[in-house]
Image 1 (tube, rainbow, N blue to C red):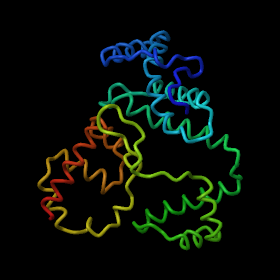
Image 2: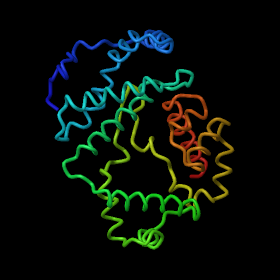
Image 3: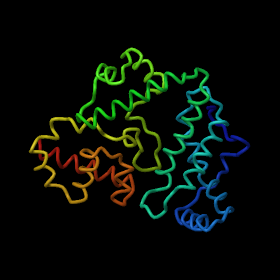
Length: 258
């Protein structure tokens, strides 16, 4: 994406409004009442959020104007589905939806199309893997997946590689002036279910040093494999708060165990 670009899809990005929290809340009340003008104002007030997301796709060959338009679709979907009763910031909720919309667009418009047979193979492998983990509480090998679905392991590896783009778990997807939102915060933790330290009795003793809320969060995250977003909805706090409480809890447990 060109540096210093101030106009995308005819929108002068340097003049986009910045809404205060009180203004956002007031607009959302009007939106829930069916006020289309309020919805338009809310969209304009969050276009900077779309811009911050599409910057991470700057290395792609996609047209920035196209990505901006697709990102706006994700923004509108987020507005339509956002629950104001949850203690979650709109930006935290909207960013994954905007990213998902852009990724679907890039996948569907990729010049190198993934064949239907490859997709079917990949999805069969993913389904078999999930079922294996549920039964055995551990990750299967490619050979075990191959035996489960009757497809060669070479074909499975090729199919899985064809449908996914590699990404670092430590890659930040959004930063709203506070704690960054990372890729690893958006996925479930299934591997930790099989780690030996979970079975260690000293872990239970370490958890006794946590507050009730911290203990509940650690249980949801590392024993039930929930994402931070899912935990936030369960506990009724923001994802940023979950992240901070999780880090504090893990530090407390580490001090006890060390």
